[in-house]
Length: 105
Image (tube, rainbow, N blue to C red; front, top):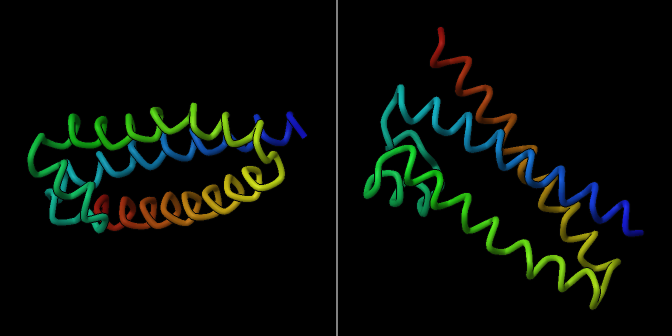
């Protein structure tokens, strides 16, 4: 169960990295209005693309201790939550890559 948890957590972090990378690419080419996430759009508008995305991703990093604590409280539940988050971020990253392809064209 621990390996499933750690693997899911690593995948979540990697998908967040890909999300940040692709979001930065699109925003740097098209402007902050191209970002669909209202919180991300606000942070990017206020702090610029690099700082705004970094702040948003730092929120995820600060949530990791909570995720680890939840694992020790209810391993099965947090693995399910991580699975759902990974599917969500996978969808986000795939969508971002589609937007990147349109920007490149």
